[in-house]
Length: 484
Ligand code: PNW
Image 1 (cartoon, rainbow, N blue to C red):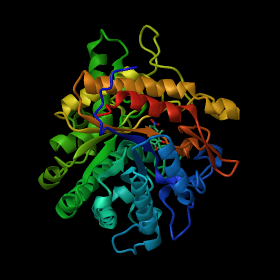
Image 2: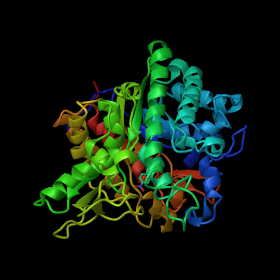
Image 3: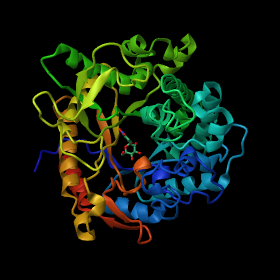
């Protein structure tokens, strides 16, 4: 048994996102998000899947709460479908009371069950109408005002029931995968074989800029009109894909590879982190992107700087990084590096999973926690996602599916690394949400890739079956969290 080191009030639990689990895609007044329309384009999602039914969680809130209790979780991180709250999305469009009441009731039910709700306002599912109306995040002025309005509707409806607000989940993914590679909704890219519209050299940076300003506007609204009476905290969740987010040099004896490691993290994480903590973009990004990276006005910079009550960290894996010679391609979003799974002497960063980008490397988690904590002056960190898929899991039989030892090992390694970061490096980590409570709609990967600690039988009426990892996580936290 390890020594109990985490504080008694360490907040741990599981995470999901609206479009990935809810289903009920057109019930109670919900309108399309960009993911609904994207899924309808043939070839965009593996097996032609969509979130139309998903895990049917919209109708099974009590079942999901019962699972969380059974797993001994203390918190549940979920996201709100903006299209349920304001179906057309905009600040002059009507609020849909039915959609709003669904979440108010859900939060009441979570609280009644002793679970802490952690709410993400935006997990990639922009109301489709806003995309059609003004290009969504491409129109900074409109998007920022509409997001602030939506955030205010949610703050007001939840009041003091919600203590943890996350404005955006992984803006890197929405910006790069949605506007550069085109793998995610709305699928814009410079690659004309994939999309008739888009400019990967410019649009992702404009979209990222809008996210930062919308985050800052929502935080200003919360701090100005809600925080004192409601007593919550608000922050953003960042990640470092693609592919992994911790970086090790391909050749540790080559200073340019060592330098490239930091640059890769700057392009992925500090793109958003630096404006929030320092009021400016990283120098490495300005140097490579020039005027394609928007500038903050003085007023904007002042509003973005200091706009995190906590740092939300999603973390999955790591890569070896090799610098590239010569000038960066105008479409490059990596910091002009090669992202690899093997280093110079042929060592692999970790074993394969079902996700092409994900190779477990737990010690990288401890290192990245320290790297971020050092860069940003020791912010309070909540880990808002961490988990893995399993190679070939979808092809296993029922009994085998429930014995997810690979996932159990992943959690042992990663939670152990978190405990070392807390205990040995003194990092201020207060919470951890495993991804995910349920197998769910894994975006462009459809349903083939499973991340859940609960097996969801999509052909058997969305019935839920706990996997071994669901119990193992509880055991791990029980052994690490102090009783007194
Ligand atoms: C995160 N990549 O997404 C998201 O926040 C979740 O919604 C998702 O289900 C989870 O991780 C597992 O994938 C990512 O291609 C999606 O590098 C893709 C990438 C990274 C993160």
